Length: 200
Length: 200
Ligand SMILES: [Zn+2]
Ligand SMILES: [Zn+2]
Image 1 (spheres, rainbow over the protein chains, first blue to last red):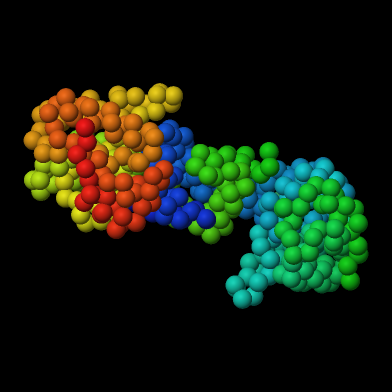
Image 2: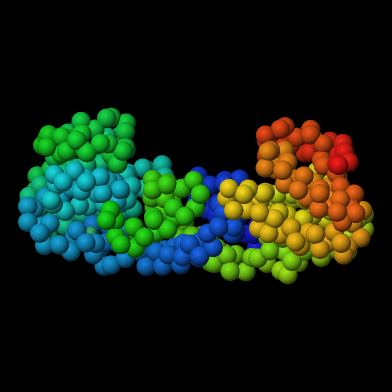
């Protein structure tokens, strides 16, 4: 035991956060106790609410505290019949930022990774397949990361779309290969959306 | 708005933590939501309890959820009549680690810094002065950091001790000058405790 039992517990609990080791957890605890008590309590309340109330959108799987996310709930978003598949909610934010896309999304919350036990079911692909058959989808745009796993995931979904008779495309490789979609600048991302090519 | 209102709020709230900017707050939120919901809720509960219950020891000012900390509550710690002044609870932990000190502590929770509005009162020096006069203190050991502010604080307290007729010493400068006490290895810290010199 280095400090009081409750302070030790606080420092240990903070280490659940990614990238936070014992030293930075200690610094965080001291800072909260010395200078940020009320904002720290607010952080705790927000964490509890968020972790209890935020689930996944029933349509696109992104994070939302409602049954549907705002984009899926908007009829305007269904007008052009485009559906864009991305790996994470951050990718949705990055594409929205470009202002060059007004369709809907499907968020995989990851990519196929058999070694980690992440297969089609973990990515909610049965929901996507159902949507491909039930909805009026003009084109499915695959915007998974240009990595080995992202490409493999894109090809898997392309096959699904072809089987369902839906036109499918992949965003252009203006995105640097091996990079992460959410880190790409808006211009490159706009270009790669414009230059998308039919797949299969 | 980048994500759902509650997720945006969660990402913003996490930035109260020192060293956490928008990008790492986003990574933390996603990680908690995707993989660590129950440990995240436990973190929130621990934060609430710690920020509500942890106060300062009435004797030495260190962090504790009790009226007195464990060290101040132990009669054994009063036996040798030594009282060691440090800047932070982490310094107490570092000195305890050496195993070469069995007296009591006084934790300033900072150092004199007039420009930041931190004077004798903010460091609880009236409590220390009272203890110097009321208790049987054989020697006051000043173990503030060997920085300009730490030295100035030590000299200020040394004057106080002299006025109260208490013997006062400063830990030896085996500690690298300009460094932080809590980062020093145990051997160096033991040596600097052993080699302490009378002050004034
Ligand atoms: Zn949605
Ligand atoms: Zn104490």
